[in-house]
Length: 193
Image 1 (tube, rainbow, N blue to C red):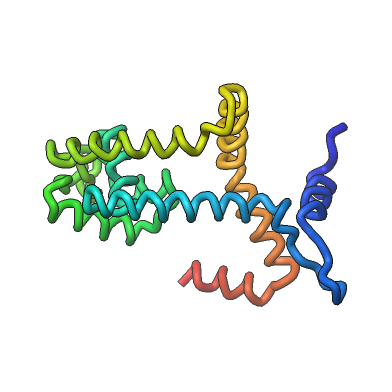
Image 2 (image 1 turned 180 degrees about the vertical axis):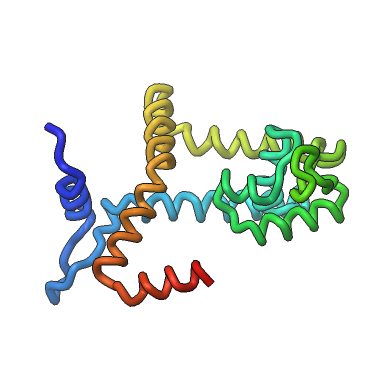
């Protein structure tokens, strides 16, 4: 049976709720999916960053940019921001540091001369290749508790959740507009200024 979106939302949301002894609503952290995603991400990122800094003298943001540069050959800060959700200003700062360390070259895009793009230098490619082994070992260790079928299901589910993020933002915008109209108006006014 397919439930309407509102029924699905209420059904899923209620499974992540519990009550305090005073009767107020609380989030049931054992069933609240965003908490698990946050905890896993934070702990994985912190652990990786610690090791990458200790062994290679670069942080997780540099690694993320190196990965995209190795895949795309050249990429702008805006593209990095769009793909992985990093703040564009953070990506630009990361690019400046990477350029100063000789890991990338910054230049103008051949198609749109207004856009600055980064490309890997041989030194950057070597660093990427060195970190890659550790990154893949961390992934292997994380997933060792899953069999091959579980891994495929997990990856498919994560992709679906990722593709659904625009709907999450739209639902949040609607929620704010309905329940906090003054905040919604302030946001719209700020966007038009």
